[in-house]
Length: 455
Image (cartoon, rainbow, N blue to C red; front, side):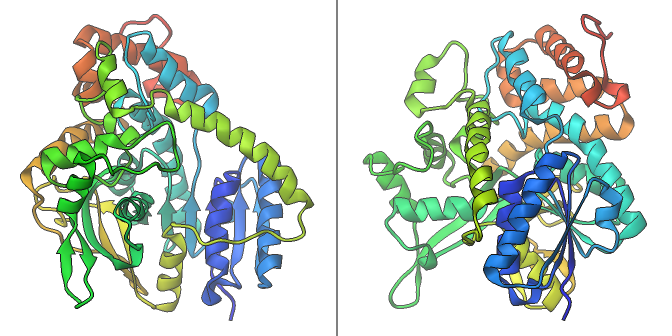
């Protein structure tokens, strides 16, 4: 049986493409998939094609791989569309999002989800996602979009707002990845952990986190996590030596629940951890300022060595990743059900968050596609924190939908971290500087001439 057509938009993200394709090709129903790899960078596209073909050879599957620089050609007849691009790249745009705010004393760790960095990334990214939606409606209107692009919540919201017919889900690995980290901190196998999470992307919380007992019952593990933190046994060293993960444990002791995204991310979504006049906080919680630029440099260096190895290798080792994409494709294609955590429009799934915002909830997947589940009301302290982030997301989506530059300033002034550090004049000037610096990476209505002041 011929497998589905999978279009990969942004296939030049070769390592990520390798993980998704490697997962998919290990599933019998997807082994005969037709892979259409698309990227405007022909060099990276060629590297990705080499990797994809060698994955197919390694696994002995009849996958057909094609490449193109035409987005619509890649999408034509697709059943699934995986999106993984970064508009503006590390240079110049990520560098800009870090260096310009520094002139105002505003520091960041990741700057891709919220804050002025997340707002600017959204302004660069959403128009391209909308063009993708246009092309999908023309040549693959029933395809499922698996969207891995940040800022995830803003992107998901903006797509649902302008293209409600698109079958989309925003995907992240923070829920399942953090569950594995917590199991490690407690010296428990992940197979014995049961949890339920809900919220918004990068600020969802485990509403319950439990361990399976020998008699088949379940025990609340939150007291164990708090005890381990207070006794200095948790968090244990993780993959990133620059971030000891203390912020999330501190939040657990304050609000009673553990957040799913990393400490370096969470630190910049709130006003409590990164302050220009409080280096003691940076030291106490091990907050890695400028973390994302460092990762970008490391990833480029690592890829430069790996690319040559892949070119020379006859086969490529295939290991399962944490990503949900292959589970979704398999379930939608075969009907075999699975449960994933997805970012979707809030159609009453979380009743204590605004209707229409983007929420991250458990979803059933089968032949009917992505089916989000009802969560109900969140603990009020969690919903309150999320709404501070949703304010920024809502105003950024409004800016994009209405082509309103004024709403860009409004979004920035509502950001918890930015508002804790800068006054209104500084926020307005910073936004002007960022808009001027990004120039043609932005839609025409958002561009500002350098030194121009906007009334």
